Image 1 (cartoon, one colour):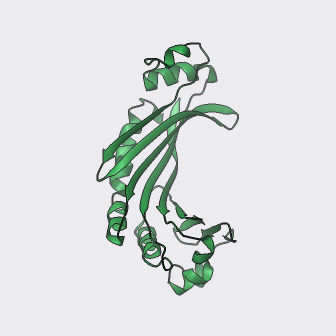
Image 2 (tube, rainbow, N blue to C red):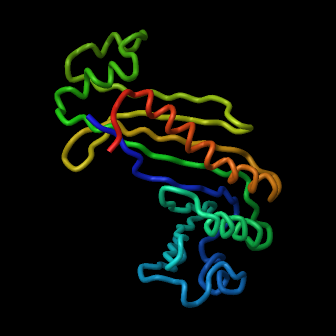
Image 3 (cartoon, one colour):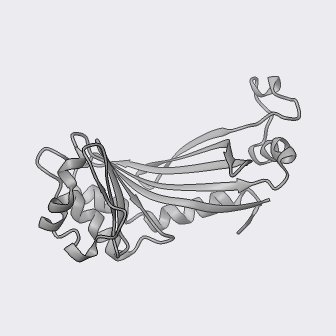
Length: 210
């Protein structure tokens, strides 16, 4: 059994945002990227804009939302560009929330052990509903939430399929509502703190990392 973080994203909630409003010309005009920075694989359509660059910036814009795809660490370059995008959004579009997100996988090498391992990690069965799922092939999940650093940290654990096998998917979301650009900056600066808290909680599983 082993664990690892498989995805790190930052999500800006921006009601009234249309993907077409943050296209290539907008990015050039607002100095988000230069013309030579765009990498192959970019998509510009009415429904979605996906930007890949030769630098540490990759994001997908949907209606009302922009999702930034991150490497292991949040670089100063990426942080600066996320702030600039937040500041330069078109008229009447405003960032109302920021989510710092981490997704982890707990792999159980023997699928037959998933039931017992999930019981052990999640402390199941212990509730009224769980008593109806006491057979060997039962699968368990859980949802946790707490206030953390002026925001809300949520964690959801549930069984999932992965490459023809089963594992536990662990999704962390550290969300804060934002009213001003300073609120956006303040929450983005909590990335390192959020990452450390996620690592601390994930390590409580007692499973080794790979």
